Length: 81
Image (tube, rainbow, N blue to C red; front, side, top):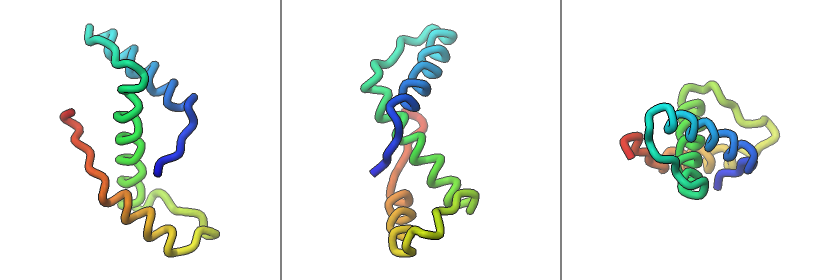
């Protein structure tokens, strides 16, 4: 499960809309963009975990950290979509 603020999704959607406008590409509806946003956030979290640049809080039990890493490892992201 990925938790994020709707305001963060909105900010990312607006950035995407501006980029699409500059390239004369139609905007995606916000709800269609949500799936892309979630995949990109998961991709960046996974990459940070692999590079050891993101550390989970020491108060988080090790089994939770393992479960989070395992879940992130199972996610697939096709950047060509």
